[in-house]
Length: 272
Image (cartoon, rainbow, N blue to C red; front, side, top):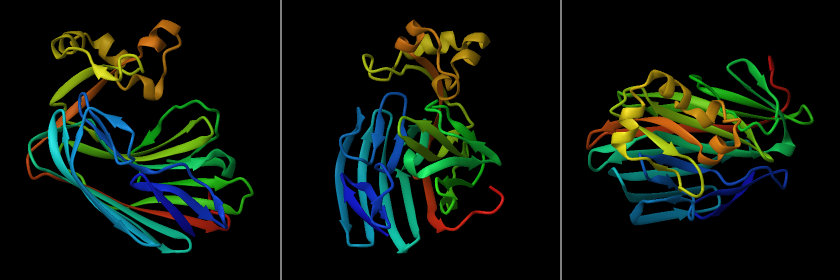
């Protein structure tokens, strides 16, 4: 196994001399800003300082990031353990009180190498649905096309502050499978409605208007994480694409962490 590091992330991963992935990374967001460790992706944040170093089997670094609603320091480490295993860790420490919409470690696998995914004992086939098949689990499987090449992604360890809960999801989009290990707010210190489209650039509407609209239970239920599980059928609503999200406020000094193993198994995985 070997990789190519580009723009701060694992951009290519070669198994038997074939690249099987699209770029991986780390993501998080607040009400307005979206941060991605992959350079050139994201908006409305500033990297105050950045350091990284790497070799053939290890890549690590740190960044201090100012979001619209917080400031934190990020440390990350990716390491090839052996020819079948990669370990990835990402950790944040809040440098001031900060809002979080989520805390995500991202994996992307090319569709052509995967027959189906298995999460929470459910088998998912690729239909380009972009639906988030999300559950409070610590692992998932990807079954290879030939029945021999398989992948397990498993949460090894984590630091999850009060107010957040862990999930994993898989979704089928375009020519790839996207997998996230994801912390989501269970305590809602603020809720926002974002217009998740290119022309509004996924910004929230004014907070007073979000607060007023979400007092209506029908509107709240209809917009809650809307695009992730039930995209709008109406062309007009798809164009506007409103969705409601909770935010949790974490105190200065709070830490969050993912420690995740990615394993390729060149044999059949039982019970999948």
